[in-house]
Image (cartoon, rainbow, N blue to C red; front, side, top):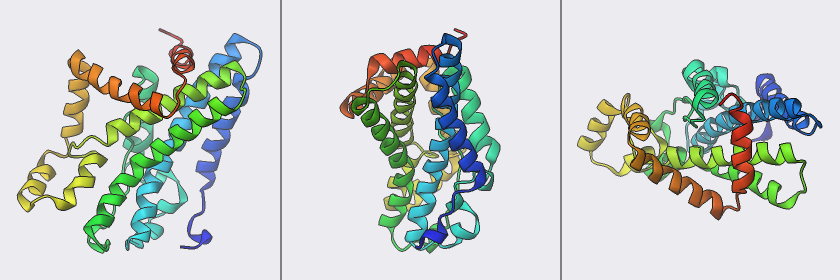
Length: 249
């Protein structure tokens, strides 16, 4: 693959610019500007990470034999090329605003028959969550290494926590999530056939269970916090960022 194959779209660059603008806004010396900046920074950063997540799938698929992803525009990081832009970008952003839920984004369609091996199929599924993990790790490293203004530190820390939560959620072995996609190539035909039947509603059932069962929700967030601490996350700043992001509560 050459550099010409990967061309960030103007829309992606615009989202990235809005994210940076939100970061700058957090540094202004007024509570209103700080709060507004954190909201823009987190929403923009989350949208950027959704694009990077799907790009991870497409990039590994391209290297693994599915060259059609280039013609579909998946290597441009443009969310308008996803199978359903509303489900891919709009709904995850709305759920993040309303409930702070790091819902996985939409999808790029991969031709698994074109991939060279089952190992490549697994890597294609793994690449998306790994993109979230890498982004979360980089953000925590920046917060730890640089003396940032308070608002910017809070916003980046909360955004990093969301990336870690997205990684943990996506890596669960539930049909419809990437964690199951990692295992699926090695499962029997009968197991894959069953998974195809439950794939449309299995993630919804998982999210409902996380909301309805406090014990399950606690286990999930314990995993998230443990991993966040492992990569050096700043819990105090992440909590402050969450408080500013959910300013209406």
